[in-house]
Amino acid sequence: MTELTGTIAAVFVLYIALMLAIGWAASRATHSPADFFLADRSLTAWVTAISSTASSESAWAVLGTVGLAYKDGLSALWFLPGCLLGYALNWLFIAERLRKHSQEEHALTIPDYLEAHFHDKTDRLRALSVAIIFLCMMAYVAAQFTAVGKTFEAIFGVPHVVSIGVGGSIIVIYTIMGGFRAVVWTDFVQGLIMVFGLVVLSLVALAELGGFAGMVEKVQAVRPETLDWMGGKTVPAFIGSVVGLLGIGLGYPGQPHVITRYMAARDTRAIEQGIWIALGWGFLIYSSAILLGLCGNALFPGLEDPEHLFPKAAANLLVPGVTALVLTGLLAAIMSTVSAQIIVAASAVAHDIYTQMMRRTLDHRQILLVSRVTVAVLGVGAMLIALSGTRVIFWFVLFAWSGLGASFGPVILFTLYSRNVTREGAIAGMVTGFLTTVLWKVSGLSDSIIYELVPAFLLAALAVWGVSRQTHLRPSTELETKADESV
Image (cartoon, rainbow, N blue to C red; front, side, top):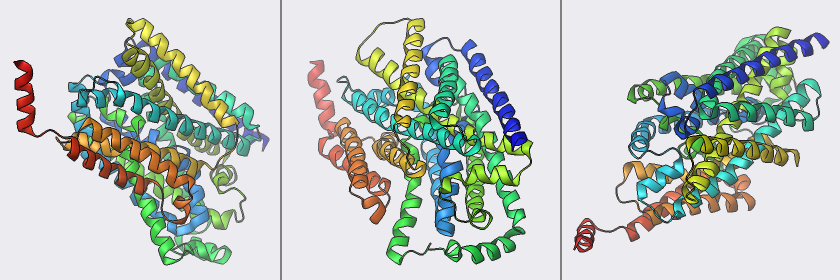
């Protein structure tokens, strides 16, 4: 165990040094707000695809999904098509249109894009967008820091107070240095490490059980309900669970830390190539996570915390050097999402509030200073939230995921595909999506009926359509109004 711990520590140190080196290199190319918040719209296909998927699939892919498959068995398989449908929805219907429109409107953030699209001079849309982003992102980032604590506690026995403080500080440092450019390049490297770790560990676990036939036999002997497609649920409960897992894909269009990658893509070619890279990465990640969770029932029966399966399997099934690299994939999963979310939350404060809403006239150097200070403050705040208590990573992240997905997803889709959507409709949709998420969750309906994102997304879309229909000016009326104004 001493040899294993020493090897892991050495690999972790090298990994962290690489992340800081990327942050330093990115800082050399960061000279303006467009650089700090959007990497000057220069991302290639591979970087756009891997960084966007890695930032969306955090500790819930490596810890949460593995734990879900361990606990729920084959019924967790429905999580895979749900996520891949979300990828397809983003890349086929949002990526290219959002890239072009945001570039035409010189938008650096999602609030920027919405305000420009609706020509809103009141700051209401921007203020509402910033509030939702900030609330959900802080909860989301805190969940990732909680995952850092779980990881180091499971591997080294390090108290979560220490691991959250150290891990969080490293993420904040490289994000401060290089901004969005540092975030996307570290996410790219971390995404490759993540997929390597999960694929290798799941295949080794399967081989340990004697292949698929051996796995079925041994899992059946230990916990037969694992191989039940319905997970031991009644038909209504199973249908609700499946719809909920498939509905997770509805959250992808509304994640600011994901869709800003499309805004930063270099050109149309980067988007066209990126879709196949993203789908391939997603399939490997989730099929491997679910396979590992199923194998875990036979290899490590009776785990008190299913979310400890990944680090436990790595430590027991692999040689020290490979164990260290695979466990680095767990840290990479967490860090890729945290940095992406911190930069989005920082942009909401530094750019949208300080520069745009408060109308501060600053030069590029001053804006970068404000942005970096904001990153530091938000990072420390999220660490303090994480230290306040332990949460179940999978469902806590899904709550923040649904809040963002239901608030922004329908609105973004309407702005890209409808000419009749109005500012009032957008506001109604965002408020409806966020409040439905909160109320559905706290009332317990997520557990008894269906995951909150599904009804929240649908009701938000209905609110956007209904209110826009009531407030939209007909073309003839618009022409008359413009004519009156010109007179």
